[in-house]
Amino acid sequence: MTSTLVVICQGKTCQKEGSKRILSLFQAQKTENLAIRTKYCFGKCGNGPMVVILPEETYYRQVQPEQVSLIIKRHF
Image (tube, rainbow, N blue to C red; front, side):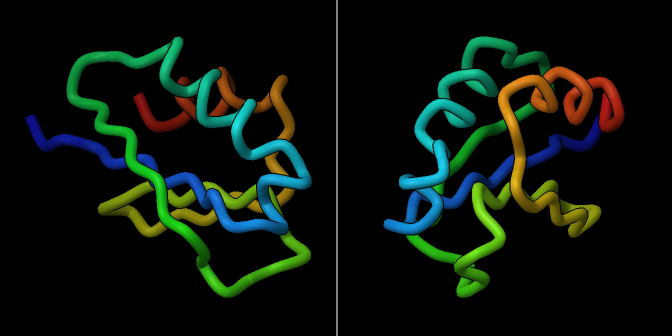
């Protein structure tokens, strides 16, 4: 089975919008075949917190804490 990578922006703007909390929620719900990484900036400031699911290249913008479990369910 292919591994899915979740990349969570940790740039200044995304951090102001709560990306550290989003990162911790993804880490708490980590499942098999799911890798979690951070990136300093996607260059899409103002849309944060940004989350990208790879290899599908699915972008989520303005992710809220209550959406994390839904995103995981959608991709698993």
